[in-house]
Image (tube, rainbow, N blue to C red; front, side, top):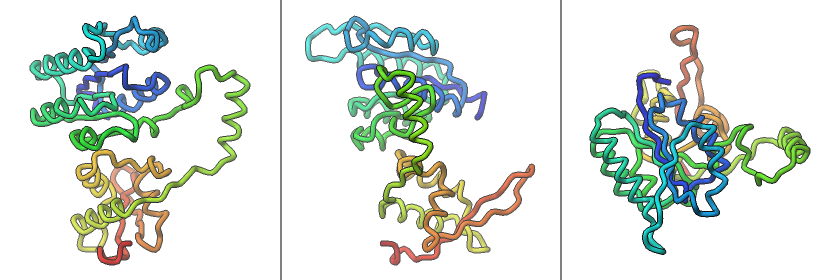
Length: 262
């Protein structure tokens, strides 16, 4: 975490899951200091009346935006205007747009062109145009913690306890890693391969993220890239060597050529 890295997080309440709000703030906090926290919506709507307590608890400023015309979303416009005002202040290194709405694609592109780092957060069905307009796109499905379970808020305490015990007994669910990801891993290896025939896992991860902003190993059931690589011993060999400050340097090599990936 870089404490000097200043972040503005703008939340589209109409297109965000309330039960994920705590996990969102926790995730973003690992990337720097959140200076501005704003959530946009027409808080008079019944479907948003449960947001008040969470916004107060998390110290998020609620921006009221009335619907001037039925069927038109003035909330999006209010968020965009604020984002441009914040951009003009030159006070922020990163903007986080929390929404699954592709209408924010032009905003993400404009902010990116200004030199700011753009993080999008939304569901996995978020249109690809918005995901690719960001430097980094996080899926809400991957953001969970004990305080924000992805279950109905009406769940009783005893039901929650039973569910957690059941989850502990279940192995982590692993999903098929698509060919596209393996091809990107090979490209990263080919780009960063050193004289020993290995590539830095961290550098490879950064490359993949630049090429595919929504790449997240958690999508496939792995906590980090090295774990994903180790799950495919016929494809990759992972090597750990002593690093600086008693740390560990993790590198890998590909056992296949690009033509051999299938």
